[in-house]
Length: 232
Image (cartoon, rainbow, N blue to C red; front, side, top):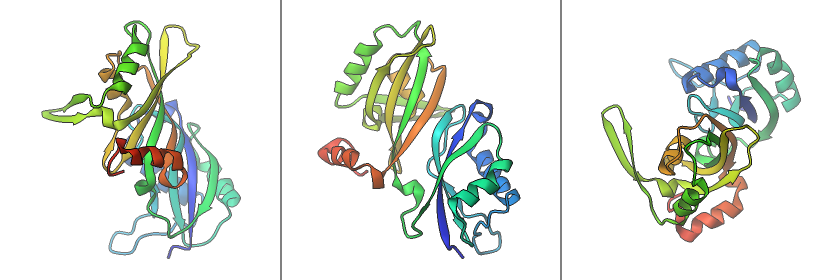
């Protein structure tokens, strides 16, 4: 029986950036079990831990502010939760914040609206990046094809992008872009595909810095209602 819902903010560093979403879920199940956290389990023939991640982090991507909901069948304070969990964490994962949220809130996955990324690309081959970004943002639509194995998907990649900005970067030979991309049940932007649509080289590094939820993004929701993202 679920009696409490904790929203966990966690990081994923370089050493674990190539694990899959399924591997990450297995890691959390083991870590919570070893920590003695009273996780609630589903009923039925094959019970499973009641934990959910906001949005899968693509393989090869690091993250600063990933979100996970953990349902408990006994109450714990957020501090006790962290104290029990910390010894079980891999060095590439940390938990900077935990807070209690209402059991009746929508599923975490359903609340995600946008994801923000830092995307580093080689400066060599990225000449004219500022002009490419300006053209892309000014366009009403940008047709795009994504090929995966034998499947080709055609879509408007512009509709998946709210904003892109060039950022100063200390690393010599690299250009950093900040992107705020759509991430919901109707579509999710992929930073490497946006970089390709801009005519930029393959990213050297992709780092997700923030997930934006509907419940705390009134300005973005107002922007959405003006017509850019119908159906969000």
